[in-house]
Length: 416
Image (cartoon, rainbow, N blue to C red; front, side, top):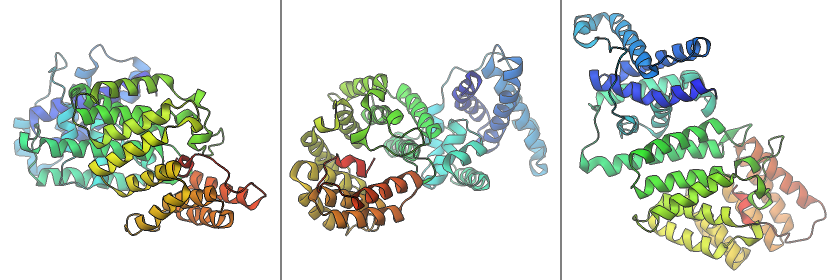
């Protein structure tokens, strides 16, 4: 990403916040800001960034908003009252990023719409960039964004922080959306690539901004720590040709030591002082993995304890599945397989490819090579991710050859 692109991503929410705060019109202002960002992306690399880039963007976006209003004949009479241009001089110093995030994650929107609108309005990504990142048609993204803005308007949402009684729920929605963006980037649910770096980078950038606004919030801090500790492994998660490398087999010298230090430092601040929440617990689990010199040195007893606590605080199907991996690593594969059979009663886990992948690995650890091979192939058929499919097929293929039964590797390879 070029310096100009970095600057535009950074300024996008501030510029949009300035315009919406002045006019109260999120829908039209958001379109106008996108066009101003596009104009800047074409002009600045050639002519250089202006001395006052924020003022430049505000002025161009304001002019474009005027044009948009003039093109809507039904609103022509209101033009003079609402279409005043913002001067290119001093601009307000207020940072409206948090207000924008809560607006984009309004409860009237679906999760998919929240993600798309957040990436565009707060992240500054174009519709085409979002479509490429999410592997969906550009028209689909455009439709999601258009409908999201219409629903926000229909809900009567105002550009202001939510009232105190709604803040915990709205902040939780923001954290969920940022987590969804990061998770999709870390392990793509479909397509030819395991990772989509543009999504993980954007999720981390936006979460840093949120943390800057709410540094004392334990879950905001925990989410940022989780992202840093997880993304630190990215350089070692794939081979040069894009093949998946399971956690236990990764070259840990390639992990990002600076990101690990930053993540653990955030945990050291928040864990002793803030109420414990699910993002802090997930970050603590990631820290245990990252601090182990080798896969064999992983403190699975500590990880199991953290998963037991996470299961009590925020139960869910993936928490259950990951906890069972830890159970198997501490108490043996038979214990994990027994728990897995019970867990599949949850419709969210039934027929999920990760359940089959975990079962295959535990069967392999238990020495049932033939059943493990068939289950790896079953898992491969279920996943939409090509790197995961190739990895699972390679595991099945390796069991088709003469290998010692119960070949030991970390259970994390079934889920990483």
